[in-house]
Length: 134
Image 1: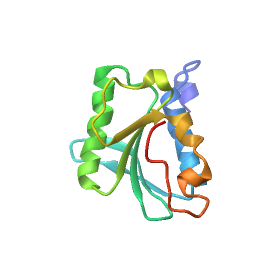
Image 2 (image 1 turned 180 degrees about the horizontal axis):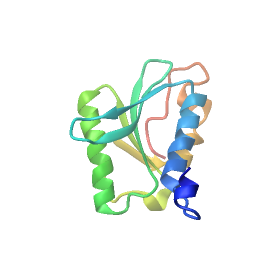
Image 3 (image 1 turned 90 degrees about the vertical axis):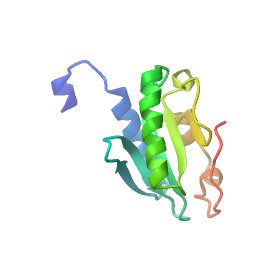
Image 4 (image 1 turned 60 degrees about the horizontal axis):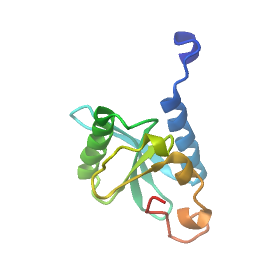
């Protein structure tokens, strides 16, 4: 449908978000999203098989301070509603990383997160999961 509306124009952000959703399904997660009263949204509220929660915001590029601010504000708002959840911002690549991020927010390229081993994600039966950006 988007190709019919924007022929020749790729929607990289949507494609990246879809790839993250596929990986969350592979990791056997329960997935929903968060919409706050102010209108901010977080792409994924994830419950892992071990019961841990994570808020994941996906953005193709966040070098622009306005874009980074919007994405990080949404994570902060959702974090207040879900204080047990780890907060993660996944980006297309290292060049897309914002200059600063609040303490406690894991910022990393989506490919690094996707390539985490089953041991790091807990899919090997352990409850370990990658919590730090490489």
